[in-house]
Length: 157
Image 1 (cartoon, rainbow, N blue to C red):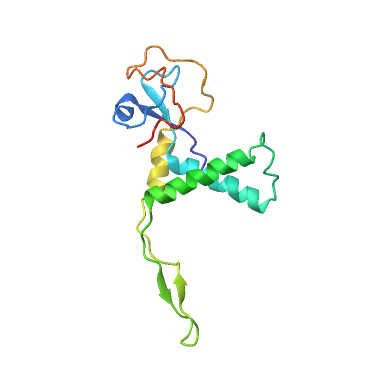
Image 2: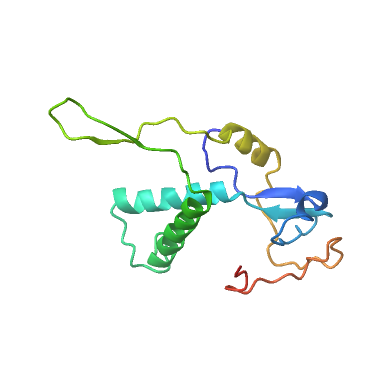
């Protein structure tokens, strides 16, 4: 794995999918396999899209483009949700460069993190094939999720 984001989407078993609170679709042609993407990889994709938009001066008003404003808005909201959900509460401490200077925040602090290489390996070991049939509806889905549809705004808690 050379790129943090190249994992893409993953294929999980029915046993792994069954306890998930959010349903997902079965993979056509792969009996008992379900498609997911770990949010961290989508979030990294979004961060990269925003980075490219800022550093390369992309015209973000083109709604048909990968860098269109709707995609950028989606990415910013995806990252906002992640930051609020995970809420890193590591204290940022304060220090002075000298006794004559005002105190300032020191962001270079030790964080307790998840093992990202282990997460990457888990996703890589389960990555779905490159060309997925995204149009076929699976009729004989063991979990009965083959015809699952998501209506935006219905997951309110």
